[in-house]
Image (tube, rainbow, N blue to C red):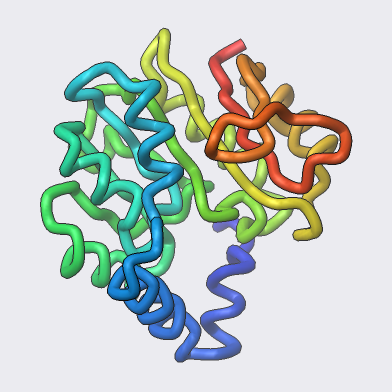
Length: 201
């Protein structure tokens, strides 16, 4: 058993948290807000018809967009309520409930590795700290030999970027490119957001 994620600790403390999160993004989508910046970035770096793993997919906004762009998408999230919303709002991808720290898609009948693994929406900061390296290693294990992972999260969430870089190395990954936003701005020492493109070391 692995330590319960910070996200599920929030859900246990407030059973309405998941539905609040789902409705928040539904309202933003209805208002016409641009919710596809991360997905456009991933689509631009992906070969056509790529196999993409949306790790910590939430209610499916990133994976749903990528599936509509013609990619083969599998989304995994620890929260069953978010997966139910993804299935309802974004049919097409294969949505699965699962803890990223125990990710083993071949055991669930999904044997082929992925061209890209994307983890957007501050997923890394909602993991239990004791599982961070393990999650990164499980993501690496699901990459194709020439595959890449792209992970984005903000500063000020109890996960220093320097610690993340140490964890990346410990998990057998190495950075290819570091950005400070999904719109491809360079990463600097003053950046308050990180988008890291990673490959197997």
